[in-house]
Image (cartoon, rainbow over all chains, first blue to last red; front, side, top):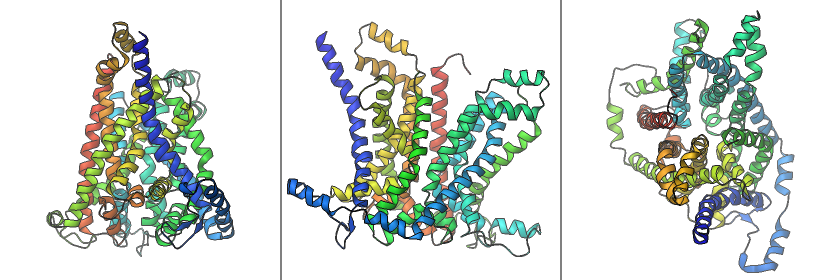
Length: 304
Length: 266
């Protein structure tokens, strides 16, 4: 009996330890490294930053390593309006597109939850399906549509809505279209999940008591779907702030979101410490919404 | 009784059209004989035939496929273990941090994940290439696997496991012969989703790749930046079909799973 206990705890330990170790090694440690490099100086070397931490140098090495760290990169970010503007722009675009997504996604989620059960399942699959084809391809599809002599402008010209074909690509409008298109399933699904659970007896009760339908919707459906609204908004807002592909392909040089800034600092300017500092500040910006998101997900996926 | 009002019907129609029209237009243009997107030159499969001669592109497709298969398999193993840990092991030390490390990557902007991974590989001086992309994709995908398997385990009938153990089966034996078969469809579905995630990723792969391991999205991105071309329309159409098949298979499996797991509920 004791033997079996011991074996069980060994196996159990192994089950916990493997994924735990993996996440510490490839998720937590990398973040600490980003934090460390954001405190380093740019150097013309390989890797392009200093100081390097040498384990072999021991205690003395650690001390000189600590002495080499500084907050210079953060001071630099604060002094250059380019970075501050980039953060503000990213948060602004993310906030406005989350609002747009809510306005477009809510009616869709609501409509799905009103259909017969059998149809609901099929509609949910229809909404998820495009989400699994890559961002890149979906954005590319919009490049096709929005280009100067593309289908959208041809349609607008044929219908005599415009005289001159407007330029869509390399505008903030194109970025919003791309974001709303890519993130729509992220908004619709959590909204649908709460709307679907809505107790219909409540709506019937309101109707029996003579409440008009719009008022029932506003006083019962909307407040009860608040958790879905929060989940959808977080699921969209957080990744949109750091979005790279959409502003890069559809916004061109017109929009400079923080994801593009990190990319450029890293790949074009080879300034790893500054790129790391930009990333650390971005994580700090997102830490509150991420914690709220985790709290929500844990509550939703855990046994009572 | 649920009734579909005209307004709801219009909203649904509009929403589905908005989601699918761009993809349909892309696929149609991939058959356009004219090089100019604006001009319809009749149907052709020329662009697809031309792809077969593009050695660099085929090479990238093959690399992406191998990375996706290996990382999806690793992510499924790790993610399933993580899900079992979170659901079955109660409150152990470090559980909160463990849960945080599972949920954070789900929403973390890809540029940050990619950058941090790359800096790790540089810090421990691992040469970047095929295997570093595999590690990065495994880490990203395992969190999605965990959430899917976890939600399956949560509404799992615990009395089945208890019965097996009462009858003398060891926990490991119980897991293999009772739990595993029941959650297998969820595991299979998450493997396919992990596969699709890896096949689609551009940003994380761009940071973590090295010479000789240019994945398909990286190659497509470098072409697409220069503008729209019929060859790219064809490549993207093929990828849409491949991913589409994988996802439909995954959702059918999930459905099968749900039907099996909760008898009496349609």
